Length: 76
Image 1 (cartoon, rainbow, N blue to C red):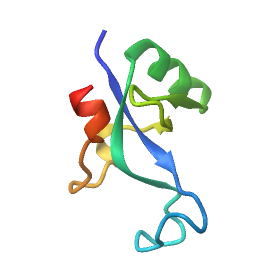
Image 2 (image 1 turned 60 degrees about the vertical axis):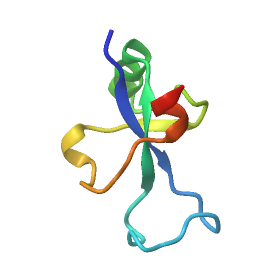
Image 3 (image 1 turned 90 degrees about the vertical axis):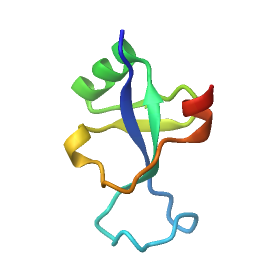
């Protein structure tokens, strides 16, 4: 089953604010196992990415063009 992608929730005081205060998700992208990711997306809940980070599944069209994939997710 193909993986889906997710972004981590912004952490006040930890993440910079150059994306704007309204941006609640931050990069990099994280790979999420397909079945678990689709279930989390349907329930609007967070899910654990392959690297262990807790993320929210996002649609590809909602990802900024310059957002890369987390190295741990990319190289396992």
